[in-house]
Amino acid sequence: MSVDRPHLSIIIVSFNTRPELEGCLGSIAGAPPAMPHEIVVVDNASGDGSPETVRAQWPEVRVLAQPGNLGFARANNVGMRQTSGGLILLLNSDTLVPPGAIDALVARLRARPSAAVAGPRLADAAGRVELSFGPMISPLGELRQKCLTGLHARGFPPVSRWVERTTSVEHTVDWVSGAALLVHRGDAEAVGLLDERYFMYTEDVDFCAAIRARGREVLFTPAATITHLRGRSRATAPAAVDAAYRHSHVAFYEKHHPSWAPILRTYLRLKGQLPGG
Image 1 (cartoon, one colour):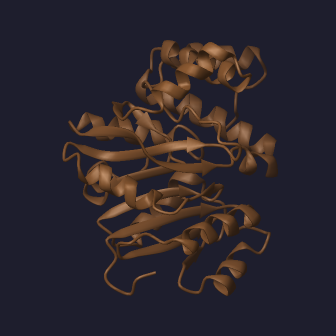
Image 2 (cartoon, rainbow, N blue to C red; image 1 turned 60 degrees about the vertical axis):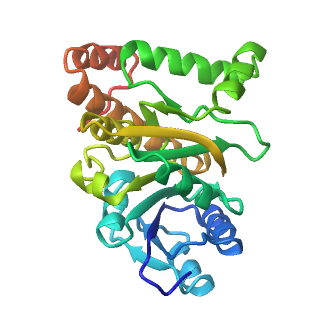
Image 3 (cartoon, rainbow, N blue to C red; image 1 turned 30 degrees about the horizontal axis):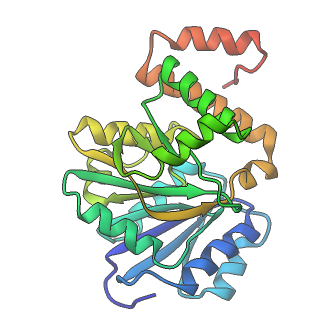
């Protein structure tokens, strides 16, 4: 990591994912970005020794150990407030970054002055691409996204071929996944960073919506591919993760589609999935 003033701040939120975090940091350390940068791990009170492991293996990485689990949005905000790079990369701990991927992502964002955010192509460990962007969450848009991702996960050939095609072309989108999201600091600060009402999930869609509301663009680019080992965080506490998703789902509709929120609440109540609190 460069000792110069960082141009790029890489923020990784961690909660009991030490093996994945080690893999992520190792992949970056093996081929670091060319530009001056800093790496910050915001640890949400992990009980698996993650902070100690990071300090021992990567002393140049700053660890911001939190007293409790702040959730994804709030922890990322802690990291953004305590860094200084003009560009910010929000990166999941369950990602692996190939050589040159971050530099390529930065280059594409800088080449598009109208864009505030850029997201790379995400693929799993086997190389199967993820549909990591989509239309604004709405009842219809959500149904479409779930159908596409479900059929793609099952290997339905027409859908999988379509996903391969659409993720091979650079285009503006409504949102990109927060698993690897590059943003200009000025734009992030202009929208008040991530909305902390979302403990986990939908904060990336909400953030991109706020960016677009200011007339700025969100860019998906296949110029960079990052490996996303999906599901690792959920495996540590599936019930808590499901509850967090329902909370965020309801909060998103209350904010963006208030007329639909009561319908969503009724639907979840009938299924026995309405979150409390």
